[in-house]
Length: 245
Image (cartoon, rainbow, N blue to C red):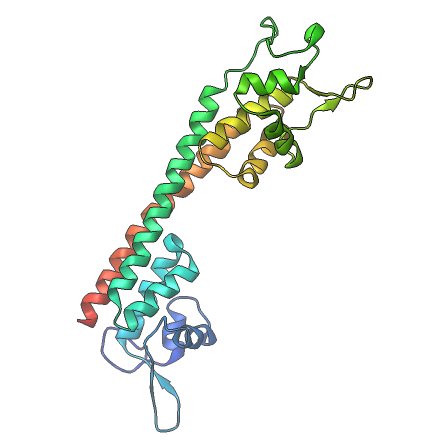
């Protein structure tokens, strides 16, 4: 006879596991982690669960996509320990992080809008003699930063200027100037150098800024999916809290 989690009967680990494509060991691990309330034991020592445990499992699995496994674990552990306010604090922190990620996305989008591609007919006022490239001083002045900052960006792999064979001076070509400008905009948006590096790599791999549009669309979609997942998780958690009383 198939067991129904809503019937109030006792449930075995396998009854919880089957409904969610989990192993019985995963269910036991969740209990040990505090994600599920402690199970009762039969006289022979076997675990028995109830619809309350099924509700806890549903809530946890719904929380994971929006908050991540570690935070979802902490949320459920707090709820099961009677510390609902701490669980709400953890949820608030996740929402704050999502908001911060959205702000970062907007900063990147703004950086790209501010990067107007230079045309061959427009000489670069920061370029050296013959307009064959740009030296570090003029480029730093154009961006409003110190030459030491450009050297730091070079050390992080964000710009890769060639060296003049006669003088040894750094010479920034059009692609280097583009990368420096993009880095500058992203730094103003609060990005760390290690966060900028993969974006610069994407721009270089395709030879321009166009691939960033697809990357930003994907990023925007993932943030939206995370926001919706948080709503789903909140609904399941609310249901679990109501059933707990």
